Image (cartoon, rainbow, N blue to C red; front, side, top):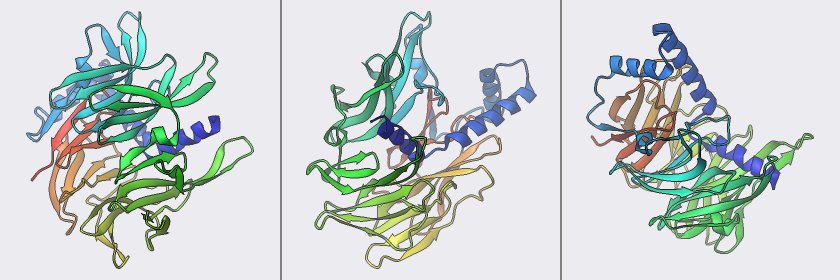
Length: 400
């Protein structure tokens, strides 16, 4: 189980839209630049000074939600720190930010790990759910229908050894339950089926059946040196879904699974591509080779299976630059966020026409490099970007 947990955490990190190493590098460069302006200022004061200089007001289509300020008096939540186990993780479902954090009284008298739910529209704390002692959240699995979110948890004993994982399921009314870590309990309602991402596999929880099985080999030191995984991406209809196949130093591709025959078919000419959405009988994907940033957008016709380039990367990418794409369901645009990797004062968010590739809207993201990778959707026209410190969010209206 310990090795499976380690592999799950490694795979989750691989699938994140953001890249922690680039993000940490950007933050280091930003702090170094700030020190040049005023060595005696604190990092937070310097960041505020830079924001005042470049952005006296944020654009009209944006709103800043500082959800950390909703904490009670004398209470604070730890900021995101990838090097420790109590780092804050987030998941956005509609107008609710689901956050895993460690809440501590300012006098140090109490410290508890919790799930906290922030309402983007009302700017309120909707619910705080205490988690067991010595418990960390591995990942948010997702949500759907009457499920606000599911997450996998691991408890640790005093000597640091891991216990069995568990699942917490939180409903839309904030009722919740803890359950055993099984494919059935980890599954989400997707396209009319209950589907679980189970380590490297895709599981049909309704039939307790492995739809697609991954593989892994183990090195002499007990770590996984080579593995191949499958991920459910999005439904085509009640009978089919699009999956991604990837792996460690592996050329990714994608294909279609058909429940009627329980068969999977990799689509030709999709090497190094990751699917992002579907529209008018076509699958949209982004070119992203192993260990490289995303770039151009391609489209695959599901009738002819022909794959062609439909949109060039909207920005010329320099070294360490990143671009992230989201394709809202039933919308007429592809959202993208361009994060500069060289310490410039602002990143970019934009919307492009999926049929022509034309840029429909584009604007600078304020507050320097505080917002650079955690991009979500509130709805098809509203983007949510969580700050690198995991304490505030930008709510952005991307309509024309």
